[in-house]
Structures are given as C-alpha cells and as structure tokens.
Image (tube, rainbow, N blue to C red):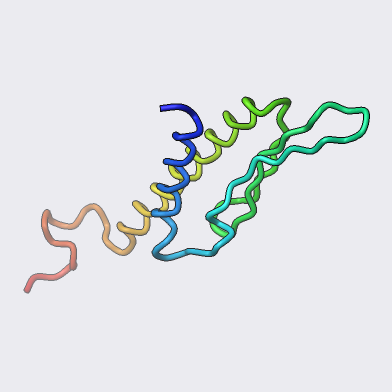
Length: 107
C-alpha cells in the first residue's frame, strides 16, 4: 500500500474515532499546501485546523517529506484518540473491584 493510501486509511480511521461524539467538519480535513513565491523554491506545509486534535502547521522541503509528515501526524492523532477512548471507557470503575463486578455493588 502506498503512502497516499495509508494516509487515506488513517484519515478514515480518525474520522471513525471522533465522528460519533466530537464531530466537527474541520476535524475531518488534513492538508498539504504548496506555496510558490517569486524567486524562491516551492514551500510545502502540512496543515490541520481542528477542534479535537491540535492545530498543525509543519513546513516541509518537498512533497514527499510533506506526505511523510502528514502520515506521522495522522498516526499520532489516531493513537491519541484511541488512548482517550480507552481512558473514557474506564472512568468511574476502579481496577480493584472484584472480577466481573463493575457496578460496585451486588444485585
């Protein structure tokens, strides 16, 4: 699988992780922007402006580097959302309760 397909897969996974509870349209968009300026080589930027994941603006020297950085950021975003989801699942239920008893009392 090439890196663009991997990025698409990660973006879909990220959307699935945040979509049910936190969905805001701009959280679904990840960008590689290129700027051409007179007398200078092209400049590439990985950008994301979201509510859930921090804002991202990473300057890159070329398109391939931008793809790599975007891939890294999306992997990080997915991992952070997985950790957050795992932490939220366990809120309110200490690990020391007797096995199978997650309510804190017997019925």
